[in-house]
Length: 68
Image (cartoon, rainbow, N blue to C red; front, side):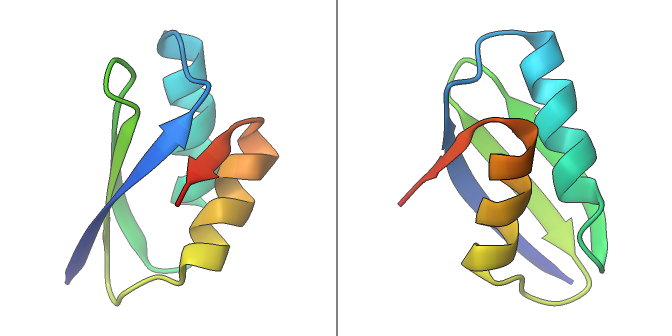
């Protein structure tokens, strides 16, 4: 198992969190996604480490931006 925390810009509500959670959950190997709207933190637990590009693409698909 691998766990990584990312910062996502632009989330302001529960709907935002749901959108990000749904998109990131679709990445192969993702087991769980925890979103904290107030801090912008997204913690992802997966079978193996994920590429930042894969997470960034999912966040972008949800309409938000992954902060480097």
